[in-house]
Amino acid sequence: MGVEYKDANTPVLILHGGTANSNWMWFQAQALVKDHYVVSIDTRGQGRSPYSGFTEMHYDDMTRDAIAVMDHLNISKVAVVGWSDGAITGLDMAMNYTDRVDRVFAHGANAQYNLSIPQYGTFKQLAGSDVVARDEDPYSYANLSPTPDKEEEMNDAVVYMWETEPTWGADAFALIEAPVWIVDGDRDSSITRNQPDAMASWTPFAGQLILPQVGHDAMAEDPTLFNFAMRYFLEMEYDGQLPVY
Image (cartoon, rainbow, N blue to C red):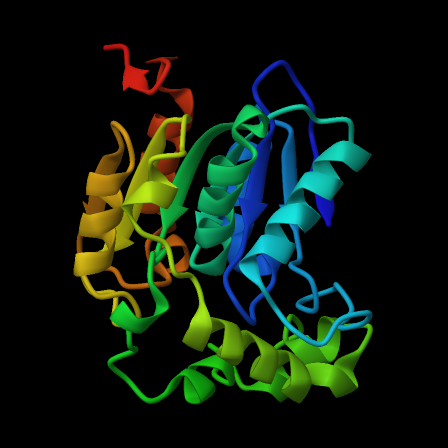
């Protein structure tokens, strides 16, 4: 967990994607840290968080972890910026802890596990892939984790979660009371376009943004564009779930 700068703005909780770590969203943290209280978590069993005390991964558990961190830091409400599994967790928070979530910028989420099959390789191959060779990457699981010998178990647990969760429909998204932007890249090969379309239509008054010429890792592929959209959303004034222009 990383915590940086505190001021009067609503704290921002940054949540990364599956099998990754908080460094993947470094550009977003750095863009916000000058004028926000930024909390960045390494999800359970991933990054700097040990794979210990559990044998399965579930989005509901990740959601409870995020709420526990907020409680520990005496934070009553956050704006969530989530990528992939982090976006799913942010939406889970908005569904089940409505009074703790100010708004959610959800990039690369999916509502139903069986409607988004990666177009390249299998989930197992996706979980084991890195931008840089592991022995060259100081931020790989092997180099960050306090339980580096658990990498295969962690990958297997995340893959099983991807293959079985989430299972949300319109009723789940109708529970959301906070402003939400459903965001994806137009070249996302992990999330099929029907998923953001469905989530945006099911979430009351949600906005939908398809970022051009980027994929699932848009926050790292084009951080300038991603951060502009992120900050625009975070700074927008809302009356309930409706934007005030």
